[in-house]
Amino acid sequence: MTEDTARHREKMAKRKAVQDAEVAAKTIEKGLLMVHTGAGKGKSTAAFGLALRMLGRGRGVGVVQFIKGAWSTGERPVLEALPKLEWHSMGEGFTWETQDRERDIAACRRAWEKALELMQRPGLGLLVLDELCIALRYGYLPVEEVLAGLAGRPPMLHVVVTGRNAPPALLEAADLVTEMTPVKHHFAAGVKAQEGIEF
Amino acid sequence: MTEDTARHREKMAKRKAVQDAEVAAKTIEKGLLMVHTGAGKGKSTAAFGLALRMLGRGRGVGVVQFIKGAWSTGERPVLEALPKLEWHSMGEGFTWETQDRERDIAACRRAWEKALELMQRPGLGLLVLDELCIALRYGYLPVEEVLAGLAGRPPMLHVVVTGRNAPPALLEAADLVTEMTPVKHHFAAGVKAQEGIEF
Image 1 (cartoon, one colour):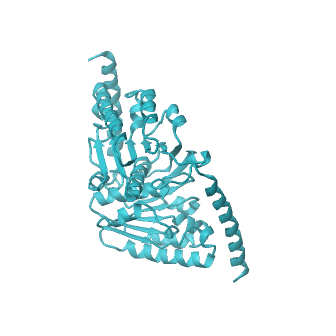
Image 2 (cartoon, helix red, strand yellow):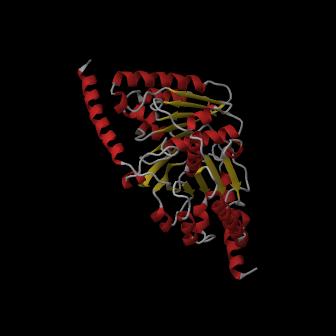
Image 3 (cartoon, helix red, strand yellow):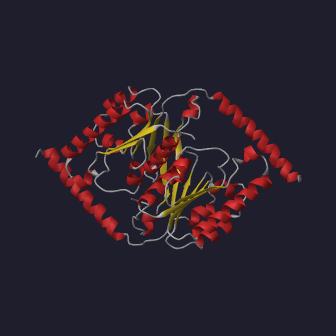
């Protein structure tokens, strides 16, 4: 064994000890309220990746889309074909597409009712509330009502809420908040939205 | 129509015009080099969400895991069961687990050879190089060699590279860089890693 290898091994053995101690110190199990926000890409795709992970553990996943739904995305047919996944696209597009505030509010209200219903599904491990932050941001749903509904869910149910501009009260209530930050974006270089990537 | 509704409609009509003009200005189509980095959650899960999107468009996806592989993750069996997805876990765990630098280097080298092979697969739309940033960061693979290999891929092939601490040269070469930033994390509140969420 070279000196380099020995040093590496010693350093990594120490790191492993620290890692193991950290893992052992964490004992709480609970259904997490997770928020994916920020202006970067990956908020919804990470939620769908999490859906795959939960399905792989044999538990059910519910998806409610609050805004999207009027147009097709590549992941939808693949996820919908999986057993134990229940998908509801309740939105009618971004608000600048519908141009009708009352219609948007009604669509978000129906989506929220569906979310409350899914929370009670037996065997559900994860509920994805896609673009709910947009609905809250535009005032289509009162944040207090949504937080009360989330607080009343079964204690082991994980929920992930996606969308830009998550309201402060939601961040406060969340167990995990990840901000997807755009460091560099190909749209700025004139690259168009491409199939399989943006939709 | 109330005054509020009319104002909303006008505002949203303007926004749609801006949006449409922006979309029209983007004309380039190309295989993107995408990087998901940062200390937050969602780097790999967003890559797998993107894999679903590409599969839903009927094109193939390749996954090479450079570090993970020694332990099981929920998404792997679900993705592996999908047609047109080819999965290769070439890693043997985080470097503090193997504690053997030579072994880690050999595993990363095999993973990179597999990545080069997958780049030539007909019908492949997306290649996920999971945790490649870790391999670069520890110097297990030379960044110049990896960038040259990526530059030589078919021009329409999209690639997503994940992992903390993406090296500057990779960020420079990338079309899209998203940083997953941890704003709040449940581990800090003593919550343990849970099945279906962390693994």
